[in-house]
Length: 97
Image (cartoon, rainbow, N blue to C red; front, side):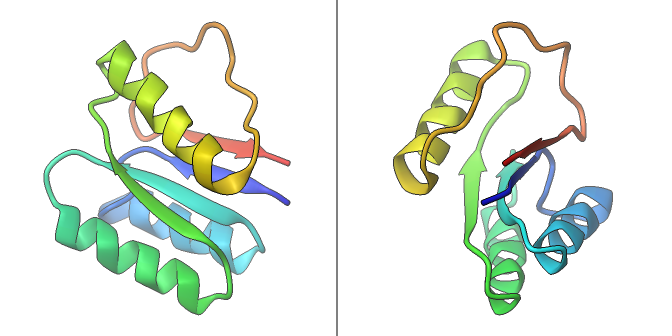
């Protein structure tokens, strides 16, 4: 299984990346900061591609929220490798699989 994690996935380029990853066969987890309804719409579109989708509210500048993001992913989609260090994240895309 391939899992894509897209920050800022509720709109714009992030949403487009999330949908493209689903079309390519990846399950997709997206983060959003303010617009939960838009994030839910993207997840619904991911699921129409036959893939799993997850939206998590996350301020990627907050280390604790990023840790909670990966906890949420791990609880629903199996184990995900979490790097010990990652540079500041903005519209980041991670692929696992």
